[in-house]
Amino acid sequence: MKKQRWISTSSVAALTTVGALLTLTPAPGAAQNLGSVDFPTSGAAEAQPHFEAGLLLLHNFEYEDAATRFRKAREIDPGFAMAYWGEAQTHNHPIWMQQDRDAALAILEQYASTTSERLARIPTERERDWFETVEVLYGDGPKQFRDFRYRDAMRRLSEKYPDDHDAAALYALSLLGTAHDGRDFAIYMKAAAVAQPVFEANPMHPGAAHYIIHAFDDPVHAPLGLPAARAYSEIAPDASHAQHMTSHIFVAMGLWDDVVTANVRARDVQNAGLEGKGRRPNVCGHYTSWLHYGYLQQGRLKDAAAGMEACRERMADGPTRGEAGYFVNMRARAVIDGGDWGVGDAFAADLDAFPNLALPYDFVDALAALRTGDAEGAAQLRSRHGKPDDEGDPRRGILLLELDGLIALADGDVEAGITLLEEAATREEALPYEFGPPATLMPPHELLAAELAALDRHAEARTAWENQLARTPNRTQSLLGLAVTATALGDEVAAREAYAVLAEVWAGADTGVSVPTVSGRSGNFIP
Image (cartoon, rainbow, N blue to C red; front, side, top):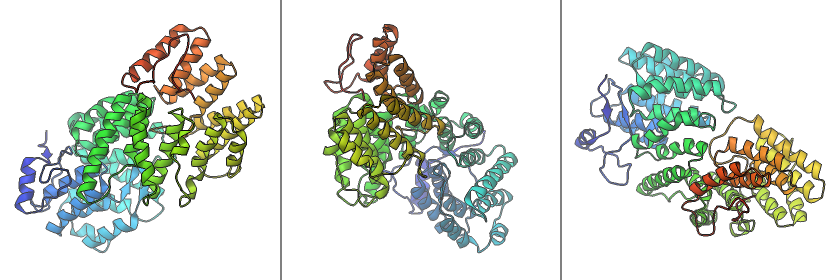
């Protein structure tokens, strides 16, 4: 087995020797624990630790810090070809289908003006082969076309260098980057099959664990990703994304304690890094929104409310577009998953600067209005938006169908209302599986189940609860609904099983959040 290169005490000593140590963790001068790679290069010895740190950060999707390290490596050694390759790679985000081709080409052009000049300058065949892949990635043609060409280039590279773990890992990532229409099980399973042998050969390789998790982070395959998820937080404890990434598997399996632990760590690591850069903490972001969802599932309503309030305060302090989006999602979760239909007013905000968020914001207010008997107010909010079949995000249509169904039910048209809710659920089933908290703010099967149960159509409701739990395992709102419905059907075995899971999930819940008996229910968690 090849000797592994670690970002460790010895690496820090080498960096300190040249006065180039970059502090990216809370403790000044401390080594970063980011995983292990083995990537020999022809670059200067004093630049190599920076390159390796950049590569580790790249695998951990810490793109900004990775770019800083690669840039430092080429500052030390201006002829360090792979440092230019690495910095250019930080502008390609395959999972998110994002790419800044112009920025990447500007970096490559600093090494040499044209592709042929760059390749001619590279001193080794292996590095030249690596560099050819990035030339394909940022070559001519539409991005989707280049994604497929890059995938093929990475496949050829990994075949030529079968012992190169990074070639295989980045080939797996390039596969994931071709799923342009969302999760495609065939593509995702192939990516997992490529990354798994790397993880087995080097259990400390951050990319292998990371890409395995991405391949398996849906309710069907999540158990296959659990070993990588358990390992990844220990592989790269100083990468906030690594800490969060484990929760992709935990959410898909309904492991709420693990979800909370992972995102507390991710938030704290991220905010320590932001503080070190003189930036304000992240209170309305990816990690904090997942943490908020985990708290709600645990019944820790006070902790969830504290996070929600911090995010609301940010809305009055120059929020970014991303922060505003996470605020709207967290507000929806606070209302829907907390079961408090008045809490939306407490977490109101002026989002006129973000018109794309008007529908999800109004949706929550309309839903709350319907649940509190204000059908007219709900109809007014609904009238601000178009038809469910308007072009755009398909989840937009689902939200509108849900409102239309509930308004029809409020008007007494039961069959029309149920039909509309069934259509919303059917549309969601046609979409690729998402990861994380429900992408449709009010999960359609859960809403359908609640309305069927309210109509005493318990057998149909049970099917809808079970369909929802298949999509969102151990989601407590659906577990409670299933338990109540099973009780109404006289199935005490199913009811007790659901209540037993709730008792475990709510073991640390706030006072007042409790598991009902089979003969009745308490709490406010049913939608």
